[in-house]
Picture 1 (cartoon, rainbow, N blue to C red):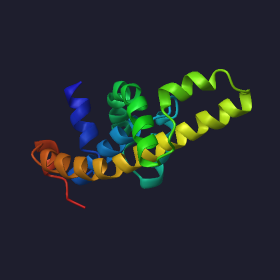
Picture 2: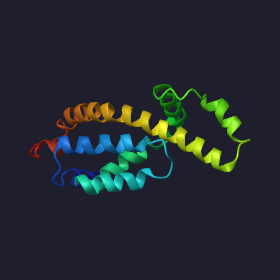
Picture 3: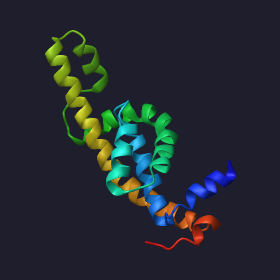
Length: 148
């Protein structure tokens, strides 16, 4: 197993590129919409020519956080975009409304959560990339790779 991991890490990827791959996978793994992160990671990896197994591994590592961060992202989005509705009270009120109004309100909450995630994810990816790059440069299997 260790040989497979070392071989996988030496597949022409620099420490900086691997760090970016892991940071993007982790950030996308915290995306506040359940069920779409695997596809999003695949699309990002293919578009940016990143290591697909590495981005998916980081995505799966972040999955417990994804569920835990949904409501904080909804609340943060509610605060940032100042919609005025309290997520917990509006959720109770939404159950007694028409289906179209429920759909509209839940879409609004999801949009606010996505906005909050985006605001948090961008600096998180930058910071994680910088930290992981310095850590991965110390890995002997990656130290021989040329930097990009």
